[in-house]
Image (cartoon, rainbow, N blue to C red):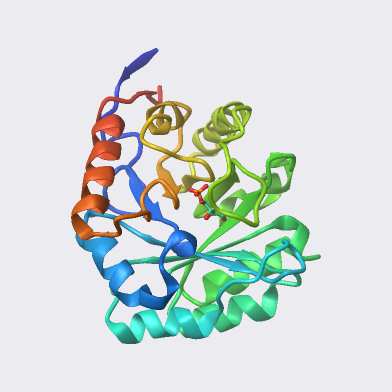
Length: 248
Ligand SMILES: O=C(CO)[C@@H](O)[C@H](O)COP(=O)(O)O
């Protein structure tokens, strides 16, 4: 049965966190003013900084690395930094981002021959660990590492670029991933990334997602704290109205 959301079902990683985490992707930031952009989006109410790392090999784009992550920490950012590694092979980058101050690190199962070992490497570094599933990648790869997963991240676009359209079948996959998490009873967030906007975020939440990455929907002109707050507040209003299935 669908009933209004309460915090009981989504109480993962401790009660001090919001039920729904909003994670603006800095891929859409003005990189010439990155520190200020991150400060503004956090002051506007974002929970987490989503940090996209692309290697021009696993994905067809090249972005930012551990030095930029460390620079944000040195700048004074204390919010969680959610590092999404679109990098292959991935293990060296995992260690670099642990050293650079990452909080959460996720990677694609295709990017390592040893998924279990790569997850353990992240956990040994004291970070939350997660697997990322491209739109056409099956959730099967999660099955035998569920006990090591703090995050399952579903790509709702093909990775590599911001500003793409949400792929609707991801909602079915989200429901399947939510069931997998609930059946296993693990303390795991379900994250989604790609094409998330004010007008579809409620539907995404109702499919069982509790961590929302949004790049171009939030980080856009006029690039002011007030404008970021307006978008994030609108997203929170939609999330508050979401009806999600409760655990039995
Ligand atoms: O990882 C990626 C793209 O590969 C994302 O994090 C995008 O940056 C999301 O951007 P929008 O689709 O929200 O504009």
